[in-house]
Length: 196
Image (cartoon, rainbow, N blue to C red; front, top):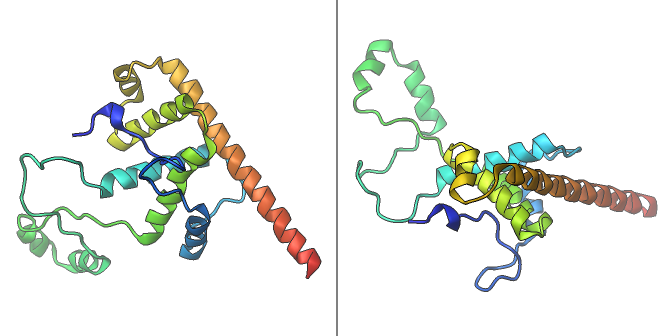
């Protein structure tokens, strides 16, 4: 089983055995999927996108190692039609079927997965310092596992105030990088309009 210290969100380009990130293809897929792309990047928006992305990854990826105790059958993933049919049933029918029915688990859509991939690719792309990236990754670990961040930083031997400052620096670097890219894309689009 992976320990808390083994947790790392992003992949850095050029590591051995890891394919370099194809950010152009990821951005193209993001625009085609219909996911809302912000015109103005803020600290809160970036932190929300990163938290949503890591929660989605944690929810959809199974944990490594043996299952342990529990049911041997996988969770049934309900479709929208299943949930609609359950809502149209009479109350006595729903109560009767409560023991047979699994808890609804709705799978992630392709747009959510693309948005999560793009958001998690920001970390290695815009945060070059390892210690700053590590602080952001501990915050993401706390968000994914729904544990207090103070306990996670204490387990890893980090000073919480230092971790807060480094996380804020990482988020500021991501906001700066995204804003710079948006400006460059707008200037490139304006240059194409002037030529045509």
